[in-house]
Image (cartoon, rainbow, N blue to C red; front, side):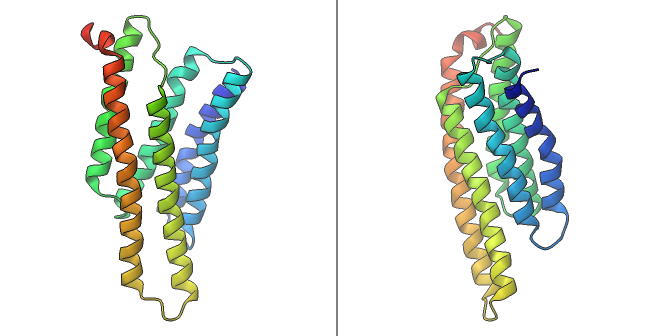
Length: 194
């Protein structure tokens, strides 16, 4: 197994650690979970970069890399939903898009074709990662302010940080929808064979 594929597998392995760090109620759990999420996200950048530079692109990588991205992002969003930091509609749209795209990929695979992610899929992933890192950062900042500022207006800032996080997540949803529509349009032939 080559290095890019090992990085993809590492991204999947880091997910349970991110989930545990996020859901275990300890001080600064958002910071720890965010750092793990950030490290996992960096593996996405490096596995693609190394695969292209060293000509190590494989069918396994084309298939597993986007699956690893989905596992990472959806796990974070499910945890955010559990912690009431994410609108359920955001998660539903993301899941719908991922099921549709995965169905197209499986249809193409049954025809002997491997469909790699397109540029819109990469934009979608980057905006999702930025939004999720933003939520982690806002919640960490909220905890720091709550700990160190005496006159901290808890409910006002909790609401403001929630709204900022939601806006970032909704922006990523716009790119999620665009990338899903583009993916389906680009792969109409695979769908027509279903």
